[in-house]
Length: 68
Image (cartoon, rainbow, N blue to C red; front, side, top):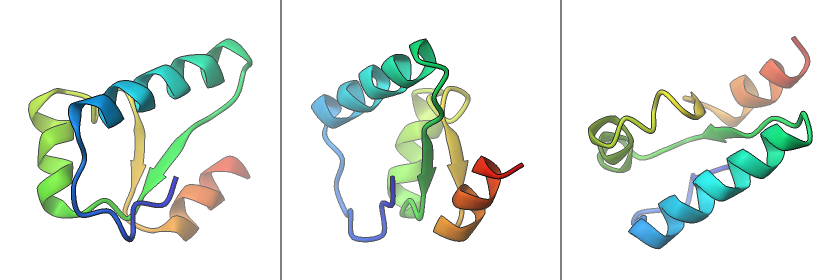
């Protein structure tokens, strides 16, 4: 998921991301997050969700991980 145009993330959105990640894992899928604004990334760090999600600086890095 590309967060390039995201400047706010609600707790409901975080919950939805967790649900999507869990469903992807159940199907042996992978979810990658990219281009997260530093202030939003801080929320991931505080909630320790940065340990749950695969977060990348750029969309290209996230896509490249699918191929590795």
